Length: 110
Image (cartoon, rainbow, N blue to C red):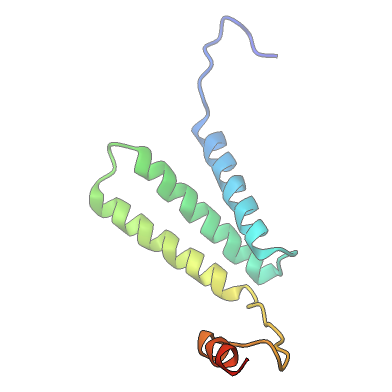
């Protein structure tokens, strides 16, 4: 129970932890299944770097070069994470056109 005489100082690490958890939840929703150990490690790295970039972008003392570097690191981590996600393979049947050209040709024949 917090004391009324103590000032309420926000804990920066708690905010950062909350941001990391929020990014992890978002990445988990994007994956749509339980991650493998490799995917989990890549998700953790992407979430941490994204949270660091988010926190640095709000800090006026962080220079433009540092922000650009953090953004590149966060993008690379997110790209590596998404590359580890399986791609969804669609099964095509004979009557479903696979491209716009096929759909237009089929429409002309009808």
